[in-house]
Image (cartoon, rainbow, N blue to C red; front, side, top):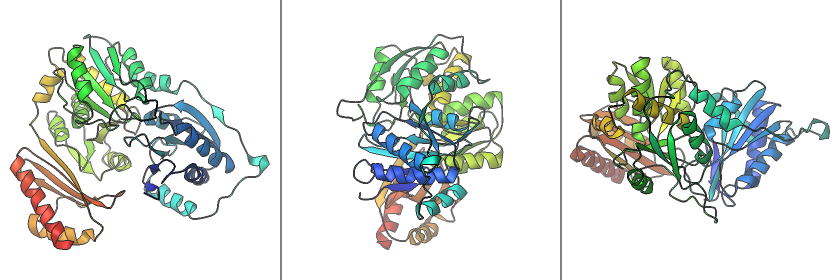
Length: 447
């Protein structure tokens, strides 16, 4: 990689190679012009390059007349909440989310607490292509420090109407992968009166995460072992910036990140029935959970901001993504692991006779297949041939999406890599294998 990756939420790359402090400074300055002079909150994760990138961000913001307000180490949802405060015009989270420790990035947040929407992304691109309007010495502000953001985040979630802070005694194990959840998760458990143990509390001395950063079935094996060893009711696994949450059940089974949104839907819709929104690549578990309460689930293109905009369109209070991201309007319009934890704990307290394993066993046993194949050609050609084989897609807002007997298939060009992604789910392995074989055959025809 020689250049940073620019996407809907910001810019990212390998620090010192495809993403430098100069990139961070330029991007932050353009963002500062976009949101206008005023306060911009800045939080970061625990990467070794974090202080350098944070300093570059401050320089860029100061140079265009903004006032950087440093939160220190904070989860992305914490930054989103602070960006919504009166007198703040936006926020920047210095984090590369689930990427390894040698990466870093900027996530850009508007004053509504949401990653930049389409109109703002277009305007930002135009600003990046133009010269900056640097201020002179009279217009230069100074960096400020704001403490207590994590405590405010926890207090807000703990006060949500559907959160149960008393009742059944519970014990959890927290796998925080040495990152921001080391602050948020224990504080959240204390507020909910839940006993907790924590593993992987710090980064390695070399600046790497102590496990694979993405919280999925492959990376949470130690958490699964610790849940059984410590007799815990559940295990929570996080990504480095704390917006995603994966679940391990009381048997030490890695039920994974797809169950997180299903659990939240089951809890919220039982109290407040209504529509929900997930993205096209989210498991049918979400539809099953909503269906228990007679509720419908709508699907959006992949990406947090796309889910949020579909929630606004459908007037849905609850939504999320199958990567472990729960979004509840009662808190804020952003993925938030604290909300996911709080609703999981609350569900278990409202169902004291049920374990998380028994709850998970009440859903169909779906099989997931996620593949990516290098491809730099014309996706329209792939789309035409697949449509000839599988019929007209049920959704074309983000690549191609078909509902299949027992599941679905989603094929889309990546927005960040020269690949085509094949994401599918079914109750039958042979259907998944057949659909993937057809996909590969079509790719062979167009290469």
